[in-house]
Image (cartoon, rainbow, N blue to C red; front, side, top):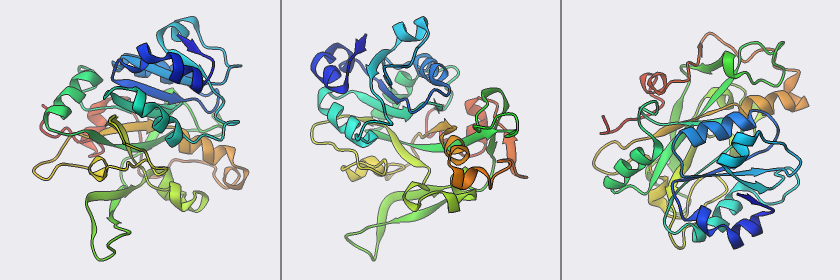
Length: 290
C-alpha cells in the first residue's frame, strides 16, 4: 500500500497501523534502502512502513511487501520523534520500532526466532519497552567504499563500550534509577566530529504504544520506565541495531571526511551478521529467554 504523505497515512492507514509489531523506516538517502526494508520484513514485523522520497524507485518485491509513504527526510522539518508521536495514538497498543536506512535490527536468537516471539516473551515479563544499542559498523576499506558502507566487508568495534549514570535534572543528587547513557563505536572514537547530543548509542527502539505516550528527541520517552534497561528484579532482553549511519555521516561531512582515512583500528573485528557474535561481545542481552 502506498500513501502520498504522512497525513494520508494517518487518515487512511488504519489497516496498516492496527497490525503489530510495526516497523517505521526513515529513508535519508539511497544507500542500502532495499536491504534495510527486506531485513525488517524477514525479521517478522507485521507492518513495515517505509518513509521514502517520492522520486526513489523501489524493486517490485520490496514495493509490494512494505507500506510506502512518500516522504523526503531532507526536505521535511519533521524530526523522527514527531513522526513517531503522531502515529502512537493511531496504533491501538501495538509494539512499534523505528530506524533509518542502512540500519538493521538484531535480537537474541534472531536467526531462529522472529521479532513477534521475542516481544511476546518480553511482554510476559511485564516490560513495555526494550533498550537497543546502536552498534556502528563500517567498511573495511575507505579507498574502495568512500561512503563508509559495505555490507559484505563490514567491521565493528569489539571493545570500547561503556556506560555512565544518567543524571536526573530534577534531582541532581541522585542518578535516574535503572537508566544509563551508553557510549562506544565510531560515536566515541571520533567524538570530536559528533555533536554532544548525538554521541550516545542507546535508543528505546522497541516500545508498546499507549495513550499519552510521547517520544523525546533523544530517543527516550515521557514514561520513565520505558527508558530503563531492566526491571528491578532481573536482567531483561535487549537488542542491537547494526548501523552504518555514523560511518555515512563521518564520510559525507567535509569537516571529518578528509581527516579520516580508515575506520579500522586494533580492536576492529569483521561483523559476521549473526546475533551470537553480538551476545558473545556483551552487546545484546538474552535475559531469561533461552
